[in-house]
Image (tube, rainbow, N blue to C red; front, side, top):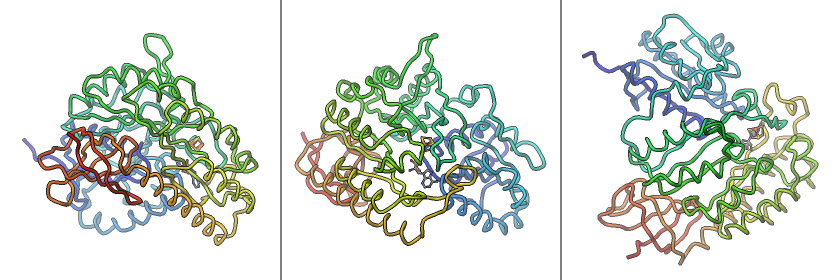
Length: 436
Ligand code: 5AD
Ligand code: SF4
């Protein structure tokens, strides 16, 4: 048999890209490709890119720049660009970077083997009519205890700052049977926790025998899989939230008490300019309803600071919203104008204003995150062990609230789901002892 060919994938950006990279590796396995951690050894290098902020694009071009000498040394090495930059500006990537052999958009990954096989430079960024997920090979290999599973792709919301509706296309939900079959396959391979992914995951409405199934019902069906112990989902949009999903946090024990619900800003004026179609007040009421269903739910969010036109008063409204919610975690970003989006036409704020606001917002979030971590001390929770810790006999995993936990647990294994008591907290991790 011929030696296996080597595939190196670098993933930029979000969890959906992490999932896509796994699926691309699996699509290339029947072609004789094994993954490698060493780019220099690879026969095919795939860069799975992100277009959400300008920095992500700069990284791609600087990485490609550095790869020039590699391509000179090994001209037979193929270099492919996948992901959202491929979709948004594939032709431009080809023009600027002659070392790139192929460009493949997120909706065309099932055609990657064919693209890689052929000679010459190629671009495939079509939005196909066939179902990509049905055409990708089944999940393979032994796996760790946690996995991502994309159930929904695309976005119809057109927030004024965001490229996702252009790079990932319109909202689409995978059929229920395909999701369940993939989940069963993952559980057979050792997975005990699945995070359902989608740009607007709570807009999920899949078909099952002609019937419409929402995200809460899908979670209910997944919860029936023996051996699947934990279910999470992200990212949600406030306007797609359904009563059944809120209720599921009260009655579905396998659904973890964590809600990632981006608000972006606490100012109604800015929310309007962002085309978010919700208000600070409607968001706060939504959080209240989640807390009524599951009082200890940990809430996280995304924030953008320095959106065009944001005044000190607007920013203060964001801080006020943060104080009112009390977040357990959050991601915050400086506004980055993206080509083709409506907000990119508007004048930007001075960089020092945006910098100062980001700094202030992050200080407040860190304070809240620390308070949430401290509040865990003395409490019991379960931890799913993901890897051995640095200390002998130590295991590291995630709590129900997605906090990293270090547990002194001689003889335990990766994949164990263990009841623990939290003994100490820092901003980013907890220490615990096993019970019983
Ligand atoms: N600039 C800064 N942040 C952005 N996001 C999306 N588009 C932009 C942009 N142009 C952030 C939003 C979104 C997260 C995934 O990325 O907060 O929720
Ligand atoms: Fe982008 Fe808004 Fe869609 Fe989220 S909801 S992907 S921020 S357009």
